[in-house]
Length: 413
Image (cartoon, rainbow, N blue to C red; front, side, top):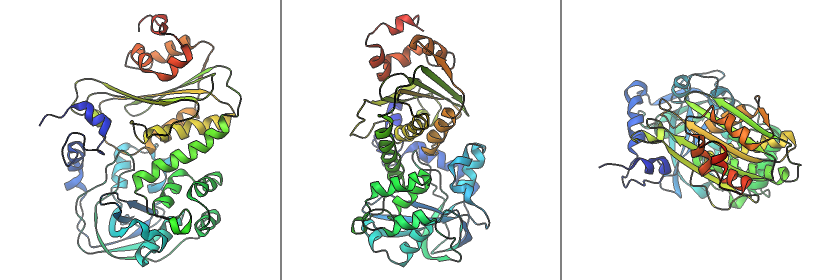
């Protein structure tokens, strides 16, 4: 069967658009780690960062996976995206694949009145520090890993017979307060935690284990859904503030080149507009078998959007990062975020990669311009796709120029 490479870009292992019951890209990538990393243990004793993965297969009856590496001590970096960019990619992946998972089969509504094992998982999720624990498994772990476009990698799993917790660090006061408040809806709980400095990575873990929201409505949320839900909820709230700020006074251009990726950000003096675009080169993660570079773009106007972007969770991961930056500046802008992904970057490692790279880029230096043409000519020097290709697809540039001659101004480059 020959698969249309364009389908892989749209699907990213989620929708089975090729008609197969499995994702051949993920199968091929997992095979690289099967023999190298599989272990044969029925007990895993270690310090969980803490780490929990909530599956989605079989919803509303799903698997909950508490996880721990077979080591004790400060393992917090295994769940801290702020440190992951400084690691070699292979070290990051191997460290994440050391997180051995035990699976518990439950219904999503069990979160509001959890059985003992699920309650222990929820208590683990509240902690900001490693939890000494032991997984007693029904059989040795297999060799199935989580390599996903949305969540960071996880190691192999086996059915869980018993979860033992030996030490439980104190829960941060604000997390304990929100967890205990069964009259606080999930949206308000997410914003309360974020405004008290709890990172979105931790908040998404709390949402996924059903620790947030009105008591009788609490549900388990698959990890990939909770990550995007938190990015969206927080960025929606940030946007409601940013819309009230004055416009920036110039075009600001940011560029970040990092590990077979180029990120470009353009902030324009205009009311809020936003686009996120990705160009996947042949040989990159979701274009392994294609012969041409595939460009995908999604966008929104001043009032945001109500439907889910076809480009996936990266859209909201980038959106929260740029809105954090605008809020810190106390300025409003139209935002163009473009990403090029080159051969060599061929593993799905989660939307954290986009969020943290955009955060890093926007915390770095930028160039000022007072004309959009000059800004785009500058950007063209960092991109491999012709700038005319980017401009012809750009929603924000179309709104900013209100004319079709911008490519001509750029000399057709």
